[in-house]
Length: 151
Image 1 (cartoon, rainbow, N blue to C red):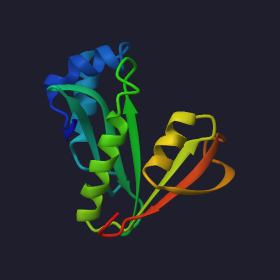
Image 2 (image 1 turned 180 degrees about the horizontal axis):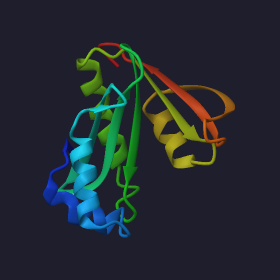
Image 3 (image 1 turned 30 degrees about the vertical axis):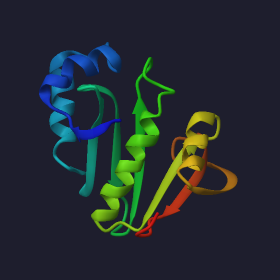
Image 4 (image 1 turned 60 degrees about the horizontal axis):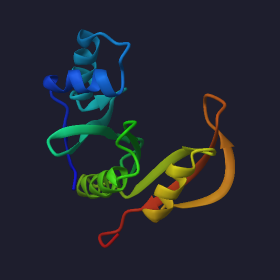
């Protein structure tokens, strides 16, 4: 079982060790402060710790694109993968954004990221299977999911 919560400054050491070893602790604390502002580029946003046994094992986020469309991001750290944490986190994130009034989740997944493609399929996202180019020129698949009260 995992829980989602905002990052706290005391998480900086874990983040440094698990995700950003080249960053100074002060830089990571600044990241945490930015994540906890709950907005990015004038849109609603949340970056949350994925916590198992009181220890962060990764993070997930949601970002508002329009009043009804949101996207997700998830990163389970090396050594913590293949334990179901991403599935549990995104399931909870779906409920969170549904309660905030969002109706559609859209995600871009790298075309070579088999684990993320399988995760989105397991979460019942749909894709047309077409490989698009994102803003950075990367090959991605577009996944969509309509959030209904019973989804």
